[in-house]
Length: 264
Image 1 (tube, rainbow, N blue to C red):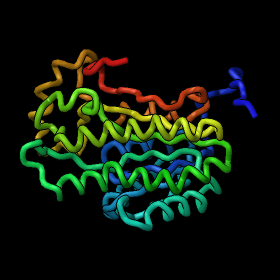
Image 2 (image 1 turned 180 degrees about the horizontal axis):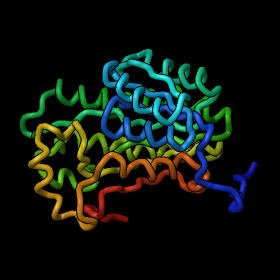
Image 3 (image 1 turned 180 degrees about the vertical axis):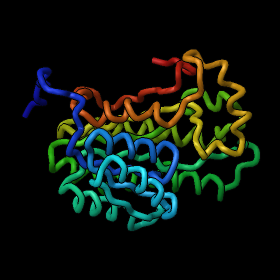
C-alpha cells in the first residue's frame, strides 16, 4: 500500500472533526494549542495535573466549541496513557493526533545535579511521553493514520541561550532525547502512515517563566522577528503537523523561535 498523493484541490489544512489529545493543557502552550485546535474544528481531549487550571481551559474552549473533554492526570502515572486513549475513543472514536506538551523546567548544573532531580526530569519530560506514545501508536497504526507532535525545545540544539531561563543540563539533554526518539519512532511507524514530528520552541512567554519574566524579556532584542515567542505562535505549526498539509513530513523537528536559533 502506498501513501496517497494529496488532493491539492481540497483544504489540506482542514482538521475539523479530528480527535486530538494534548497534555499539559491547563495553561501556557497546552491551553493555547487546545484553544487553537478547538477553534479549527477539532475534538480536543485536554490532560493536566491541575484540575482548577483545566476548568479555566474548559471555560475558554467552551466559547468556541463543545467537542472537548478533560482528564485530570499526572502524565507520569502508570494509568495515564490508557486514560488518554480511552478519553479520545470516547470523544471521537479514534485518535488522530497526540501532542506531548506537558513538561517541567530546571536550573541544574552538571557539577551539582542530584539523582532525584535527574530522575524527576526523566520521568516527566521523557519517560511520560514515551509511555503515552506506546499506548497511542498501536491505535494509530490500526487506523493507518495519525500524527504525533512532541514538544521539544530549541535548548536541545544550543543549551539555554538565556542562561538560567530554564535550560538546566537535564532539561536540555532530555529535550534532545525526545527529539531523537521522535526521529527513531518515525522510522518504525512510517509504513503505517503514522507520522511523528517535534516542535522546538525557544523561550516562550508563559506562566512557566512568570517568576523571571523581566529577565527573559531582556533578551527579546536579540530575536530577529522582534518579540518574544508566545504560546499562540505554536498553534499554526501544530495544526500544520496535524493536518494533511504535512502528510509527507515525518521525523523532523520544526524550530519556532522567531529566528533566535537558525539550524538545518
